[in-house]
Amino acid sequence: MNRWSLIGVVVAASILLGCAGQPSGRADAGWITLIDGTTGLENWNRIGDANWKPADGAIQADRKTGKAASYLVSKRPYADFQIRAEFWVSEDANSGIFMRCADGNKVTDKTCYEANIFDRRPDPTYGTGAVVWVAPVSPMPKAGGKWNTYDITVKGPRLTLKLNGVQTVDVQDSKFASGPFALQYGAGVVKFRKVQIRPL
Image (cartoon, rainbow, N blue to C red; front, side, top):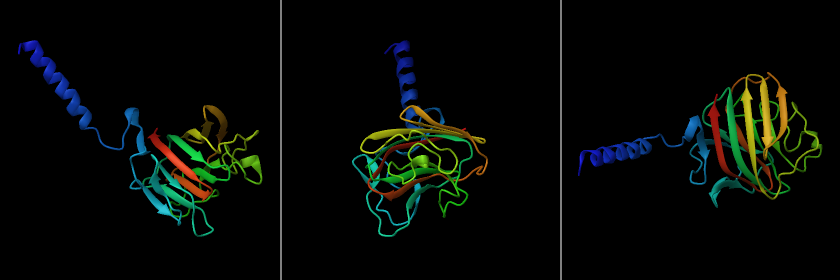
């Protein structure tokens, strides 16, 4: 083997070892992957009795025994961040992504910002695509029966939401500054196939 061939082998081995040495659960450019079709529930704290489980490349729930909603809550808090989430819900589902929760053990739409997923909300003002009690949406988009993507940015007092590439919210609000985020199961069938967060 000549000198240049040897250098090529060393460089290739260094690249492979460098990739293997990257911490698990992290994606490029600072993205942290919490659900990707291969992970279980180890990245989350559970609140409530929904039957969250890995199935068909996603984390999903389709029932609970109590009346209260159930949540998967991130194990650490975040202040400024971006979230990318791929989700599928049935048309009768009630779900959402709750952010900057004041109390990670008591998640509600009054103690967190909620990017709603609720096509059949009785008052559609704060249905799918809205931030409940903060930013209404009109007309309300529908998410039921298909895979969707939420792109959420929370930086300082500004919150922006894009559902399937279409911006539904751009608002300023300063009620909550930091806290964990959570995935909700309220009703129907709810699946999250990919969830990533990037601190800003």
